[in-house]
Structure formats: C-alpha cells, structure tokens
Image (cartoon, rainbow, N blue to C red; front, side, top):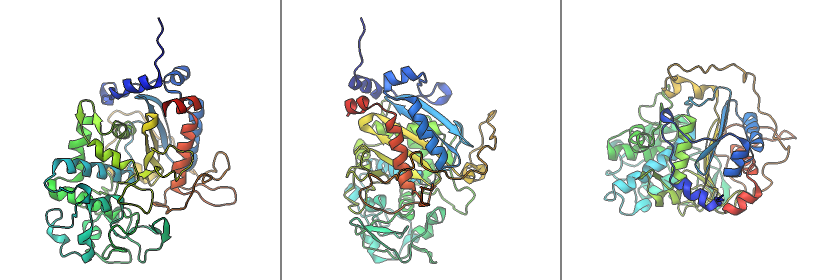
Length: 443
C-alpha cells in the first residue's frame, strides 16, 4: 500500500523535528532534485538563480534553505563556507530582541506591563545613565526601544506615519552607536543621542543605539554580558558550535547590542528555525511563543513603518507578491535571515565584506584542521546588474528609509538598489523555486 503524505501532514511531522549539532549529524538534508521537489516542492535549478543574484550583490556569501525541516539547498562563494563565522552586523539586533523576550518571561516582577513597561529607571539601567540627558526619556517603553520608536537619534530619513522626515542631527551608526555613553546620551559630537528627535512613540528612526540600550538593560538586570546571556539561553540548548560576537577590534568594552553576532551559517539557520517553531526547541520552550508572534507582525509600538521588534514585516502588504506573514532581518554586507511560517520555510542568505570574515573582528578562530582555503576568486568583484534588468520595486507600494547602506547593484540607467530591495528580490527569487501548486496548497 502506498500512502501519500499531504502537505499538512508533512508540516506536522516537521513540527517534531529539530536538528542536532552539526558535530553529531546536523541537519537532515536531501539534494536529489526529484526527491527535493517531491518532499518540499522546491525546484533546485530555479534556486540557483537566487544564489546568482546573491553573488551579484555581495562579495562573499551563500544561500541556505530549509523547508519542512529538510536542508535542501546549501551553496557558498568567496570566503563563505559552512565553518565561516562572519560578523553578521545588524542581524545581531534580532538576537538582542529575542534575549529581551526571554528576560520578560524570567523577570515578570520587573516587567509587570510587558513591552509597555517604562524602563528608564534605576531598576533597569546603571547609575551612569542618570540624570537623563533628555527628560522625555523617562517616558520610553521597552516596546519603543525594540521597535526603534523611542525617539533615539538614528539614520536618516526617519518616518512619521509613513512620511519621511529628516533628523538634524542624525544619530550614530555601526559599532560607535554601541558605546554605552554614546547610546545613553552622555557623549556629544556631530552625531549623538543626547536629545530625542521626537517624543517616545511619535516617530521611527533606524537607531542602532536603541537595541544597544536594551542590551545594557539586560546586562544590568542579569549581571551578564549579552553574549553570555545568549550563550546560556540560546546557543547551548540549541547546540551551536564555534561562535562569538564581533567588533573585537573596536574600543567597545561590552557586547554590542546593535549587531555583530558571528555564527556559522547552519547555526544562523537554526535560529530562524527556532522562530519558525515559535520559540520551541525540542521539548524546551526557549522563547515565549507570544513574543515570537509579536516579532513577526506589525507592531503597535511602530505605526510609522513596517518594522516590528527588530524585524522587517510584511503584514500590511508593503511588498506585493511576498507572503504577508514573512519576516526577516538584514545585516550590512548582504546578510539576510528570513522566516515564512505559512510555507514552513527558513532561508539564510549569507553575505559579507572582507573585514567581516576577519578573526580580529569576530574573535572566533578558524576550525582546527579545516581544509578550506579562499582561492581569491572574488577579488576585483563589482556589484552586477539584476538578473531580469527590471526594477525590483515593481510591487513596492510606498517608500521608506534605507536603513543601512549595505550592498547595492546598478540598474539600467545607473540607479541603485537599496538593501531593502535586495532583501525583497532575494526572497522573490527563492519563492519562485517553489511550485505554484505547493505555495497555494500550503497556505
């Protein structure tokens, strides 16, 4: 007797699967094209087009895809490989957010109002943060910090109810935004966070200092660096191998809450899979399911732009043709992690500049005995043109800030594609590899 496993049954089976550490077997994987199509509905030949686009829009990188718990695609180029641990830049913000979600569960006494809790008090921050550099900071709620609507100065342009505004001055970005005194407004200069650019909740600006303030709060409450807290709450129970936190070659004295996590690509995929499974790993609840739900939906703390608790979201249909429940996080250099619950799908587009692969940056030593040697094939790389030559914003309903410079490619006519558009186009190409029947059935 032959039994056909319907898509819903496949997904039910996947709900009970969690990949062991790579050292003891790792992800279950299939690479035969016919088997991949039968079990996951993915056409591997079409997936190669998504990898080609990645290679045109970042110097180093790769593409990993897992559906129904099966790793079906894993390809790399340049300095990227399975054991590489590049600094993932702003993807680290997502880990800061998830750590905050864990803390909310662990310390309900400090957060009786959850994300609505006002946090600029001495129970949450060290003494050097006070007196506040702007008295309006007393009204900042945790949800504001995580949705980047606290009024902390960040990148231009900002957004108010979907309309662009210019911050003057703008705030710091990159690792300088993660110096404690800078994030707390104790340091001046041409770009600073001394004063709020708007009242808490009244505008959105991509402000790297905002999640760093969350990491300062975590450190103050737990007595642990963010890296140590993530190691205990996520890395150890999930079985990550060889990882660290970047910017070791900077003057920073503490873990940068605004980015920099340096993990292996299959472990980044595990993090996405954790979110796909609503914070569950095996028989353990690592992250509250309710918090994961808030991460993947438009946030009441950000009515200005489609950015929730450190994730881009599409719940309002901003990117036409992409699933409404898709959520993702980008990092400078072309790194992007996607989760699509309705398709039981996790995608990791690895990227990276040369400096992001430097051990002096990440603090992570190469794997002992590794035979990987970069062949120099990407030297002289230049960003290429899109595969189709068509505008990537054909389904982009409304504008928005380019949150990070990231990689850009040239369109015909010389215009450039933002990191946001690169993220959307990569996802579109991956979804094109799923058969129409598969996507319609699984939804």
